[in-house]
Amino acid sequence: MLVLVENVAIRCNLMTPRFLPGLLIALGVLVLGLLVAFTVGRYPVTLAELIEVLVSRLMGRTAAVSPAVENVVLLVRGPRVVAAVLVGGALAVAGTAFQGLFRNPLVSPDILGASSGAALGAVLGIYFSLGVIGIEGLAFAGGLVAVAAVYVIGSLLHSRDPILVLVLTGVVVGALLGAGVGLVKYLADPYNQLPAMTFWLLGSLAATTVADLLPLIGPVAAGTIVLIALRWRLNVMSLPEDEARALGLATGPFRIVIVAAATLVTSASVATSGIIGWVGLVVPHLARALVGPDFPRLIPTAALLGGGYLLFIDTLARTAAPVEIPLGILTAVIGTPFFIWLLAGMQRTWS
Image (cartoon, rainbow, N blue to C red):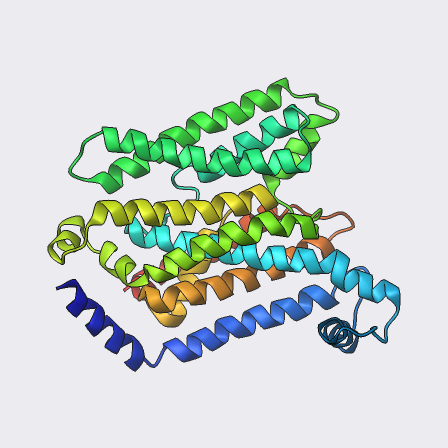
């Protein structure tokens, strides 16, 4: 039965007229975001200089530009641009998976407490002065442990609606972890540690280096590959529990794998950039409006849109004011009215 459903879905996916135009639009947003992110800033870089630097690096020759331009492109903006693409794409993919899994268009990647757990790990790392690697490691571990705790508690609470139990448990555990974050901030040194905690919790890519990309690429790639591999199962998992089981899908094991993969990419992203809200909530709706609700089309489109969206937000964050604006503030300011506008057409885009 499940094989039949997948075969029908494949044929429908190939025949849809929305997929290719929507995917091209998402790809165009990403490419435009890359060009803007590399060329716009306090040290402007022309498009010709950007192409010269990138082509020269690929061909292994010396670029015919000043060393300052090459350093800006490769060492200053390069790691930050790559991180923005990875974090934005990861949060968008995780939000897409969670919205389908929980059958709720208002769900975001932090629904099971991953962001709260990562936040507690990060502020503990800052409080104990562990350094950048220690802070990011604790944040990553905190996100994974938080979701694991939610899943264990939810599995112990036997219910006919496991999805609802998971969501409610995530809210409760997230609130508890938020209280822990508040306690650590209260105990922190108000002159050195507290500002660092506040800056991290608001989200930023300002200090991103090449070394920060290594622990980000692996988890994001692994989690995204798993979610893409399960894209057909996600279509079935978005049905009511009884219907998904009637189609022959073992919902319990697949739910664990999907939650684990989405949590992996979310925790890695939050550990690198801090808490950046709204990306995983708004971008899946944009992708759904472009290509429809079918997950084989939706996941790659959301990944491209998420990367492009965060590139534009990050460029605005570092150019709109004399001091850099935290990403979490900008995503909230831009995302809130935009999401209100999306709510008006949610019935159309979700179905």
